[in-house]
Image 1: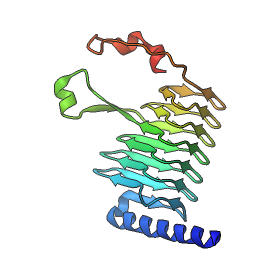
Image 2: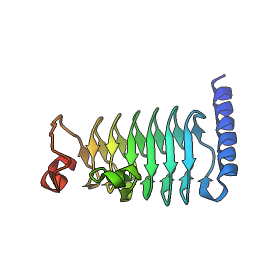
Image 3: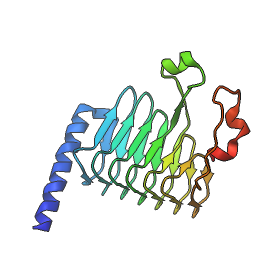
Length: 196
């Protein structure tokens, strides 16, 4: 019975991916059979592009969104637990065998919120995110634009990270809260340790 249910789930995934491919012909690519919950959403707009490798596992309520010129590449054997979100306006690249706990968020852009006019227009800045092979991203972690995570890294649950991390790094964030006036010019440059 287990094998029958597994086969049915893979057939449902294949049908789901074929429908996404039909709606986004040149903007969506998948290689081989994976197990992806049909409650998960793929959004492609503008010149966005999404590529999925083989043997991907994506659980319920995940959202993978590529807009404008955003490109998302999810390599072979990547697993995303419930509620993960990837949003690309530039590039997100996830290496083979990387696994994510529930509710991991990956954003390759920041909105320009210290200028009211630009914020209301939805303007943002972007920088690619690259996550290496065989990484573990803990539950609720948030990976921000410009991050480069090497191979075999572990990102602790709940960490908010931005920066470059060498292969085999353990990245954790301790509960240190800092408050700054966002209207103050260059408040981020003055407090760079908080944002790394």
